Length: 175
Image (spheres, rainbow, N blue to C red):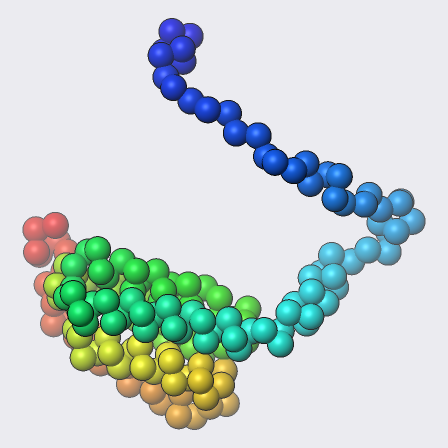
């Protein structure tokens, strides 16, 4: 075993800054009073004015990935950035105050995840998902109180599920 370790090349990385020097240790009295949940909520409150801009940035990333597919066509290489952009929105939407947008992104991710191949991506439906997410972010359609957004989500889910039901499963396609 030791010979093998000597044969392998590796590099040990050392962090440039020891973060312990940046943190003040709480006294026992301060530690008793410290509520980490309350501190996290306060931090989120301070950041919340930026949430809409961050969601706009994520929806712009989604549009950029979609535009690459429109220019270059669908392949594993072009589909992956689109999926990653939708997945990022899905993951961040609730924290950033856009749970309805997160549900649309989750439905879009489900569509992509269940395709038998990248070429099976329905381009018209994909465009509808991208535009729905962008419009909902731009209009501030944050939650179930937005009836138009809720109806749009329902239609997109139904169409997506119907499309996927028509496709052969990965087992049937020989993958």
